[in-house]
Length: 191
Image (cartoon, rainbow, N blue to C red; front, top):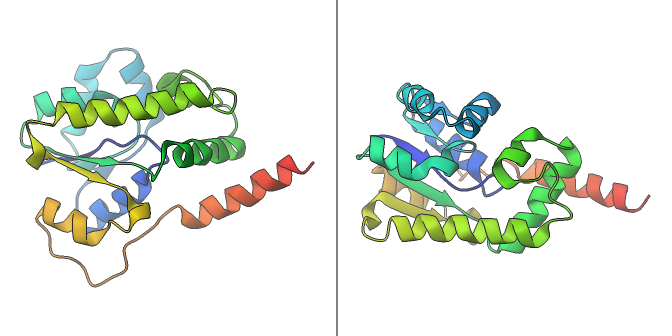
């Protein structure tokens, strides 16, 4: 069985990846070359690549969840999301401030920098999440929708993965870096 993290980036995908690796899944995360292959339509390459792993999250995998389901019918899917689309957009902007323009964002969202395109990004976020939910509405046992900000963690994730709840705190991988990025953004804005 394969586990596919199909939330957009900045929705707790790294936290999910850390959890999956904790359970021993051979895992792949964001890979620009894979995202580029997706944009070029090289889906056969990506299907062959994912066969080498037990789990994945981040780009390009959320963009091709239907193809993954068709090719791996025993797969399970985890849609990570944020409390609100606005919180997600703000996090995306903070990350973009720190990393600068990226071709990956151009491929995934249509813009290298999100800041001047708020409604476009929020519409895309909402549409992606709704598309996932609609796609799996007749296969509810294949989809877990999780928001780590709501306190959803091991207690929700482990039954879905058919794993025992570990006796360790649930990881929140990018919280510290998010605080750092917010401070950096505030410093840039005050100049």
